[in-house]
Length: 429
Image (cartoon, rainbow, N blue to C red; front, side, top):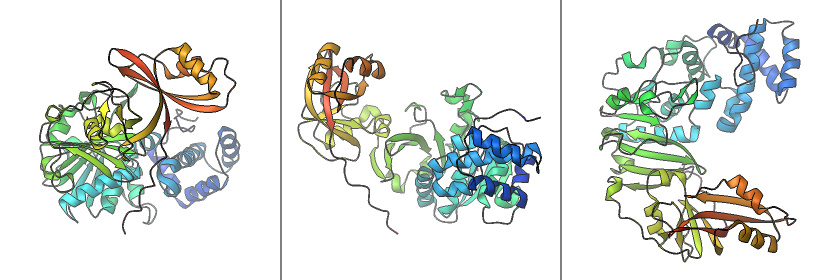
């Protein structure tokens, strides 16, 4: 009888079933499933029924799950996903390869080639792959035998089928009991529980107390949730918030031995990938000079999420010779357009007191039938406001409405995006 369902639409895979997938028979079935095209529920049912005529049900279920995970993984890993191995949780929690490569390059630059690194809570091994590609010697550790087996498979993609887990530099065990010696450490504590995401660092697995002790070592980097309080890590620990194409992916904590070099001693850093643009500050938030506050100008800048998390909006305001609309809101306004990779620029066409009827009348007058609503610092539901603004609209033009605080009230800005900057140049060979 099939086991419990998982989010991939298949059944939970055990260690024996995963081992069977790595045999020639497993490779043949996975190749057949890949050639069949997108595996929606109907296709999976049809193929599963046929394959069970020649293979055990557990094996077929595991193959279908793996095939569907590989399809989903293309969005994150590209064509390489077709050869990789996944678990549902492992795919969801795996670091994007561009982010993993950036972090690994920082570690390698600080330690030098050939240094030894332990990847604790290694998951399916994607961070280990990045560290190894950066020239480091990696030992990966995970407490779950299946997860460790998947990591080993990913680390031995070019090796003969059936390699022992230990031969791939993957160890099954409690990360709190590993003898780390003098090696550097990367740790990615689990931030999910049965009920979903875990936001309290003390509820991480392993808990924050263990991560804190690791960060007292000379060379440790910890991947944590972007919402980590600035004052939680000790003052000598550097924090880097990383976004990828505008989406904040992680915060990474660097112990003192890894802060030198690329980080230039910065305590707070916002890095935007894939371009590698970075803003930084050496001291705590309290050392920053607050940016000026003033009236809306001709342009509005929406800082990248990593910049906001790092509390570096003031640096963007200074770079564009701008000011804030409100001292607590992360919108910057300026009178001239200054290109910056750290914020999306909009041209302001109208500034109005926030009033749904008045906004609706203006939009209807201009034939607007498509509205994007952005808001900060106000109690507004963007989707509801969008519906309210479009009541009775028959137009086809598009508009962007920004609702925020200014002074003691709320204002609405009608804006249009400024042409995007040229794409990031290709990295040097």
